[in-house]
Length: 299
Ligand SMILES: Nc1ncnc2c1ncn2[C@@H]1O[C@H](COP(=O)(O)OP(=O)(O)O)[C@@H](O)[C@H]1O
Ligand SMILES: O=c1ccn([C@@H]2O[C@H](COP(=O)(O)OP(=O)(O)O)[C@@H](O)[C@H]2O)c(=O)[nH]1
Image 1 (cartoon, protein in one colour):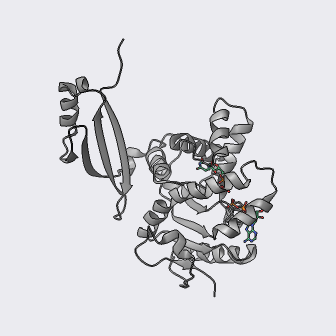
Image 2 (cartoon, helix red, strand yellow; image 1 turned 30 degrees about the horizontal axis):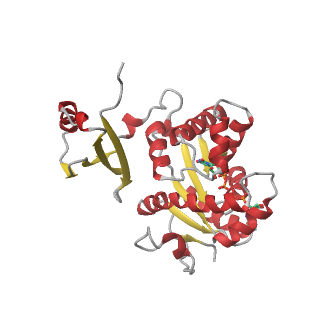
Image 3 (cartoon, rainbow, N blue to C red; image 1 turned 90 degrees about the horizontal axis):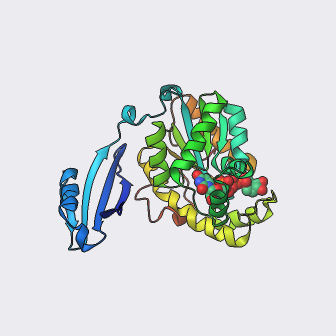
């Protein structure tokens, strides 16, 4: 049976600055001249969207859509998303996420779920996905988004709890889209541990936890891959949910700044505590931010 697809479909997505709106750019390219037939035209028509641009070889459609949290909440049978509290903690490799997360979890009663640890456990379990996980981690790349979200959902469900600190996820807009679509959960706020690459590199080389991705070649790839988080940060910044923590300070100082954020959040009055500008903040934000950044610091 001939089952060749008639068209190659490429979907790109970006978040708009307005809350929970996304823009999809869908490109159709016929695989061969024979496929630019009536089926191809029908596919185009069925989208009922205005062409964004077209050429002899491909068509692009651009349309906006708004997330409907009730519709996308595929998790409803397992957990009531209304009761669930999620906080994301992000930061480059070696910024201190796994150092700070257990302290936060203990102090504020959250279950710490580390995306990287879930992958390492899955790898050790020798499941059918082990080879894929191993190769992806060795290359400092990201595992498929839906796969990662399913692991997170499983861990959340198995804990039987409702407050989660999710460490090291989402690392890309695609990750975030998969999480929103599959769980319907919105984080309360997002912590980003900011640290320069030089400091992170030194920390990783000294980490000494037997991780085979803590070598200079993989670290370089991980730094490159970690840039896919920038649009995620930009998105939460635009929602006023982003808290930047200066993670170059000592472990205790970083924890103190995180504490301040949490205390203010529990008082339901998160706001900018102090603004401080430091030069290398630009290295992360210069190409994705267009206005000021919140920095949390205890004076
Ligand atoms: N603020 C800090 N100052 C100095 N070293 C730190 C600090 N935070 C973490 N470390 C050390 O740096 C290494 C990487 O930290 P880790 O928490 O594992 O980073 P991440 O989870 O973000 O990759 C660890 O060996 C940890 O002990
Ligand atoms: O959502 C995630 C989180 C992690 N990883 C992979 O797991 C590795 C280690 O992630 P972790 O958060 O443990 O460590 P970090 O690099 O932040 O120190 C990354 O380099 C990725 O290859 C992934 O694919 N998706």
